[in-house]
Length: 203
Image (tube, rainbow, N blue to C red; front, side, top):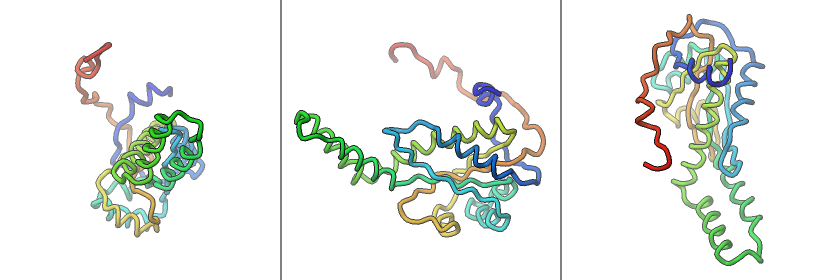
């Protein structure tokens, strides 16, 4: 299907039939996510693909006992890397030139300082860009006939301990991916009318 069809047909799937998802297919989903755009080419996303039944069971507990985490063929834990944020600050700092106009140098200095030390900004910058990659992953799953469910309700510390996630990473989301138990019912999307969200030229 083309991308517009994938967008129109995507639904959150909470019931899955048994059966593993091929590792190569899961790799392709992550490769699609890795093609997402990011601010300054930040690329802060990293993914832990969990297929082991016992680990999925424990991950279900960390996700407030949401059954689809265990039932899906895979649970993909989506991380945002603060290390990439630091690398970006290093890269931008290396591009600063002594012969740049003073205003530009000051603007660059403040940007780098914010990227290194403004913790709310650092986290928001990483999380926002990781969300974009997760959206790409859900659409790629549609191409392969997989259903997904984006899990935002979880205990990040439980997930961190379970999977051995080191410091410097934010647990952004858990994404279920597996074979839907039946054809998802394509009820109309409950969306505000387009005229309420679209304006031309100005508000």
